Amino acid sequence: MAFTLIAWAIAYVAEFSSTRTGFPFGLYVYLDGTRDRELWLANVPFFDSLSFTFLCYLGHALALFLYSPLAVSRRDFQVLDAPEVRASPRVLLTGAFFVMLIDLVIDPLTLRGDRWFLGRIYYYPGGGIHFGVPLSNYAGWFLVADRGVHPDRVGHRIRRRIQLHPHRFPLRPLRLPGRHARP
Image (cartoon, rainbow, N blue to C red):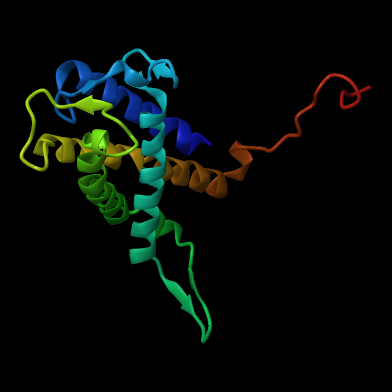
């Protein structure tokens, strides 16, 4: 849940900034055609930013699959959880690269949404050389995706501190009023 919230917040701030200043994705404009059918926060559709969290998770999972050790048997293989790999810079950078590669397909398709059921939802005022998408968009996706897969690294550090110093983080039961309260 924390990963989703942090990645969404990073994506929302980046989209809000890009629609006003052009950083980090390049300047683009959302069209109000769906404003009456979905939730908007300021001038950004909520679900556009939320979808970023799923792409970050996928990019990170693909990078983990690439670098993590595997347990292989005759009928199965499993990716082993290796905390030192999970939070390594190469996994984070590769995960961000995979997210950017996914956007190489997604952005040109959504930009041409008027040719299929999605409809025209945004445009780049200055256009771009990759099917109408500026290259700054992909650099922005790499930058923002690097921050988007970063929450797992932060979570790894917190879990590691708790494991190394359990006396500093004692676990106590939550006591609620009523039947769980002390007499």
